[in-house]
Amino acid sequence: MPPPSTLPVLGWKEHVILPEWDLALRAKLDTGARSSALHVTDLVEFGEHVDPSTGRLLPIVRFDVVLGTRRSPEHHEVEAPIVGHKRVRDTGARAETRPVVRSRILCGPLDVTADITLTDRSGMNFRMLLGRLTLEHRCVVDPGHGYLLTKPPRRRRR
Image 1: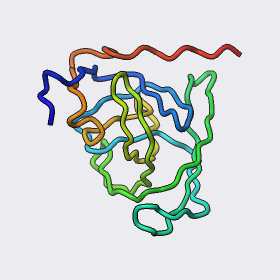
Image 2: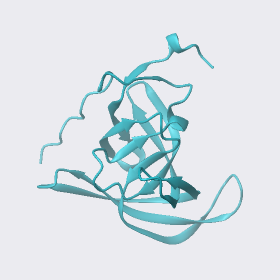
Image 3: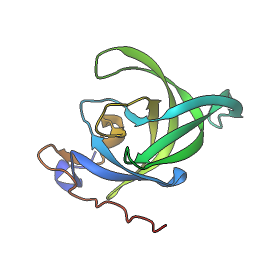
Image 4: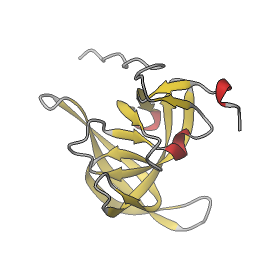
């Protein structure tokens, strides 16, 4: 493990890119959460794929990621193979089983492929949460500052 002084310092909130899904959004870096989570709607499991590491048949999931504002939402449909299911406690300490997908996450100098649980984060301020399994040994989180190493992505002109 590299010493903390050599790790990049990120704020408690940063902008992230999920390049495989062509998504750019704000995320909360939450060292109190074990796993990363993404807010999705219209989650549907369909079809199957063979997991290359285990040879097991696993489902493929289709879901909608809503970005933008309440007034002008931008819907992004994503398909991804499920790599497993994880039992997670939500912010109200209620246990739920969530599907887990894997994606590349870019956040400033952080470039990692990580497991992401899919859930309904309605009512939360951030549509994505980066948990400590995604962050550990890769960065230091400064809880007193936000957006230390990232800027909002450029808006595409329509």
